[in-house]
Amino acid sequence: MTHYQQISVSFHMLLFFFNRINGGQFLILGVAVLFHTAVSGASPKIMRMAHVYQIDSPSGIGLQAFADKVEEYSEGRIEMKVFPTGQLGSNRNMYISTKTGAIDFCVPNFPMLSDVVPEMTIMTSGYLFDKFEDIKQVLADPQLGQKWNEEIIEKCHIRILGSYYYGKRVVTTGKTPFRSPEEMKGLKIRAVPNPMSLAVIKGLGGNPTPMGLKEIFIGLSQGVIDGQENPYPTIWSNKWYEVQKYAIETNHQLNAVPFAISERSWRSLSAGDRAVVQRASDEAMDIISGLTRQFESEIAEKLKAKGMIIVPHDELDIEAFQNAVRASVKEKFDGKVWPAGLMDEVLAVGKD
Image (cartoon, rainbow, N blue to C red; front, side, top):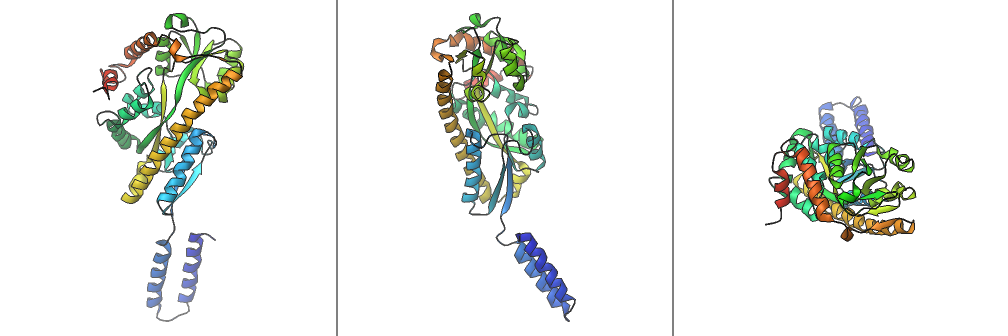
């Protein structure tokens, strides 16, 4: 019997006796006191988190660690319910549910958030960040990430608690390796169907070809596209090594994933429990980032064992790639999608 079922039973038993005892005024007081005691007892606050990741992936492991830590640090005041592997729908569905408060925690992505705050599109730009710590600095900057988060809170009713490292994007091809934008020219490279992906691949030298994730394997095997670009874990899980020969470590995008709480849920927490949630989030983000780096290294070796040839980062003309991609993105976005000068402002963070 659940806690609330017990409350209901006790309440109805007391009402039964009330109908049979004189001096009901005192019994009414007793009912109120007992009911209040039952409700305000040790029953924990239930909080729900949903995501699309497999439970044994770096994201799945780290998000479960977050749930465990919240329960531990709250000393039982909060009980976490976790719904992994898309049990509650798509990533966008869970994002919407968190905005309304139906779910407490979700794992959106920056393209979703940039629909509301266009400046956040820059988080998926190419060759802006040398390492994940650069991304963290931008997100922590009062005039950049913190300001964007305030807008997200106001317009989306969710609050970003932190972000984690999700991998570097590399390019794979079936027949032709390359080491410069010039050598990449003419190659049809699958693009995520959004303007930033098109601009980045164009800058790399490729011919961007929009295509859904589930269509990539067939597109590669039938020669509709010559290659694609994704982090190593995605390449491995989709078995594209079966139809691709080369992995070129352009590392053109460092992927970060934000972790968020419903603003309604945040405001329902005491100051102490807000600190608990933030502490658990900070630690979980570090866990996922560390596991992802380890996973990337292991998968690169697995891809070699499957017959793929890795063209390492230090063999590429990175300066040429960097200049071309930044120019392509700047032409498409600067002063149009985001305020003029934003790219230069982001590049300057942490350089003082």
